[in-house]
Amino acid sequence: MNLPSFLWLWKIAAWSMGLSLTAYTILGISGFWMYNRRINKQPRPQWLRPLHYLIGGIMVFLVLLLLSIGIIGTLGHYGSLGHSPHLVAGLLVVVLVLISAISAAQISPKRPWARSLHVSTNVILLLGFLLVTGSGWSVVQKYLP
Ligand code: HEM
Ligand code: HEM
Image (tube, rainbow, N blue to C red; front, side, top):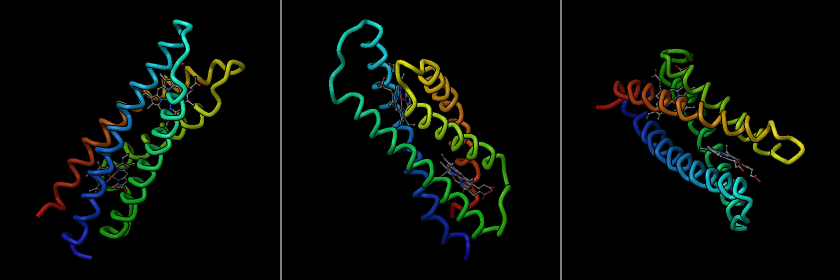
């Protein structure tokens, strides 16, 4: 395959990344909202937790989609992986998102550590997102016409 034939793939990557960052923002707001209600011992809207869960699932899906796009595109172009620091940033984000989702499913009054693990993973995830967007932005330049 020649270079421009990959352009559509990296466009999907850029759009998915935009959606992931939007999802992250909504998760941050709804997560903080749940936290706020819990600390103030006030009931929270019934839809809040399912919404947070649903958007979280969408974000996990998008990140796994980005991982497959990245691997398929890089293998198709070079025939091998590991051509820039973007690989490390990408794997970091995938691991963090999975830790976040698994710890989220463990949150309960019996397991207080799961909540703090969930929240701290997501703080580091923001840094990971910035690294992967920056490095992705930089490697995509060579595919642009
Ligand atoms: C990976 C996808 C995610 C899933 C599946 C998920 C799911 C959950 C679940 C099930 C809870 C427990 C709600 C409860 O107390 O019953 C929770 C809590 C929380 N989530 Fe997420 N979440 C995700 C991503 C995020 C992200 C990216 C952020 C921040 C940017 C975030 C922030 C929070 C916060 C602050 C709480 C704590 C609420 C509290 O202290 O009561 N979550 N999440
Ligand atoms: C969570 C987000 C992302 C993940 C997990 C991810 C993952 C990956 C992985 C694992 C590779 C293979 C790298 C290698 O072996 O060298 C890759 C390559 C690539 N990704 Fe991403 N990526 C993400 C976001 C982005 C974004 C936002 C862009 C920009 C549009 C992008 C553009 C690229 C390009 C152009 C390559 C080819 C690398 C090269 O030519 O050296 N990625 N991605």
